[in-house]
Image 1: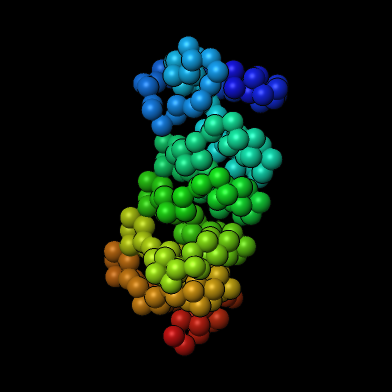
Image 2: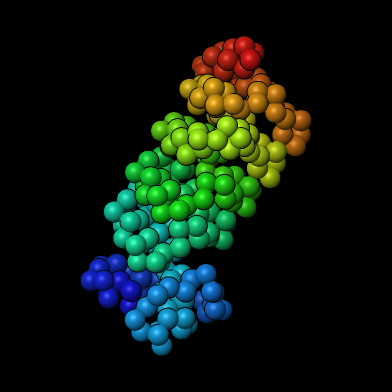
Length: 219
């Protein structure tokens, strides 16, 4: 309905297909959007269509389609809607390194502090995947406040791991340096008491290990 109304025929077909497969859902006030057809707004079909838009938004973010992301956001898709694993569109975009999509989502109000079921936020995911540009964009959004930046770079997931832990574990020396420069605590320990240096030692066989260990020891 929404996509047809705004003349996006391909998107309309895709949303109708997704809505037809969607399970019955209860009324979700946060999905209410302004609509000329009051009888349609809030109806079961409307809610199914909105759920389909959320699914399509996450797919567009994952697949790196900034124009489609913008179209969906403009027509009412919920920017922070999560899937069954707690994954938001921003988390999907961060995981794939789609900077243009990250920009669209942040401009649309995406919350970088939302974590998935493991508590991993977009900055954890970007650090783990080695997406330096995305990580830089996330950090840039907090540079106006030292407290906000410190909180962001030291935020922990459900296992007490910070972005620095992930950078060390995956061997991303450049990202590790960026995090440290931005205020990441080098001695932060996870739930098992392991620091980033412990993770770096575990990957001592990798070519990146000396640079990472040296960087951490210099702090």
